[in-house]
Length: 79
Image (cartoon, rainbow, N blue to C red):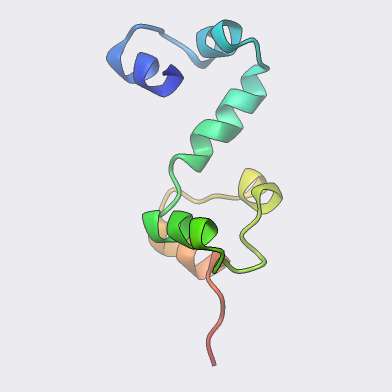
């Protein structure tokens, strides 16, 4: 598994993962960023209850490291 290989030191860079997986390094960066998503937002994607704002295109452009900030951006507004 590419991420596991990176965390265990079996590979030393995202470039190495990209080469091993035969993909572009930018793609590896985008996918790894998705691994930082708040668990409840991932659950919403899985069960279909996610806000329309929570799309791959939006996440690729902006996914803050802080889960609270992610929720503020991508959670449905309740009234």
